[in-house]
Image: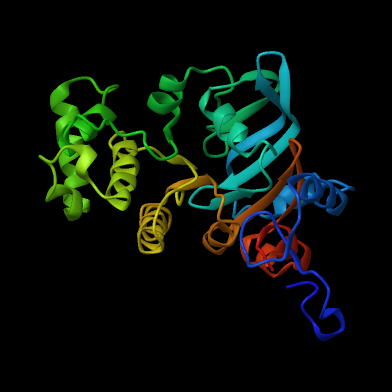
Length: 296
């Protein structure tokens, strides 16, 4: 940790907002201020584009968005290629979840646009409803913990994932394909969701989003509330979805270290703007990112 080398012994140690054993913890205000100073010059468009493998599959151009009359994102830009993963980190209130909400249609868009698809076949999804983004553009949103229906069985929860399909039989057939992939859920298909472990509930939340066979997964805090062994399980599942099935993943993760270890691309957000952008492993090695966000 910064401040732990010999010349600083005897002084209070400091760390970022998320994790690490500390005597003095940097406040959220200080993290915001210091992170903003890191990205004072902003991130040039060529840097954003240069992190994409091949062509971008999801593109956000100069997006200004928020809730009601309040703007949270300010001329925000994003690019991620097909089959790539991108992790958004930053202090609370930086606008990370607002990006996912904006892509899926939960915010008010004041300006800019959101494009999804291969080059030459891009669809402007900015003004589409959430259901049309799922049905027409293949965008699925995996909410934070506790989004299952506890009084329904595992099987019934999966059927709910196919609510936009043409018939209940189509939804049931899609659910069976998910059961074929995840035997852990298949063994519990008749169990009420409320009796599942935290890791099993998270698996069910992810699996329910897969029923519509989306191309883009928006994943909000996949590790939240989970024991370490279940966190590893969830990230193994996401790794399979990206690298075996070719899904494009945009993630918000409060465990910045785990998120950057997983992701191809990382953005550091501060006050609705991108302060830093780089490959996930590059940001992991950045000493200032480590000091502010990784607890060391």
